[in-house]
Length: 95
Image (cartoon, rainbow, N blue to C red; front, side, top):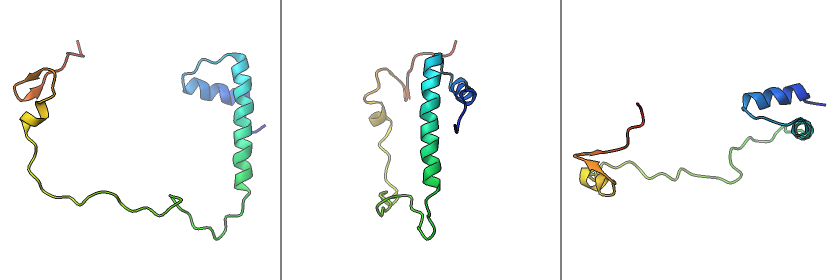
């Protein structure tokens, strides 16, 4: 086994998951299978393979920065449910 039940319990505790014993057993088997597959992938000879971050060539899709006039306060507040002067009025969340 690549991973023990205690390690799965530890990960579950870190993730704040309350798991039943049968769920822990199933997850231990599943995580062991995943780690076994990753170990198998690590056996591949990748010498001479150029690392890539994307499978297809990509370019930056952003537009160039241009100075433009802002839309203004009235535009920003036009859909506000309850504007207050030049501000958004929101419910109090801290007591």
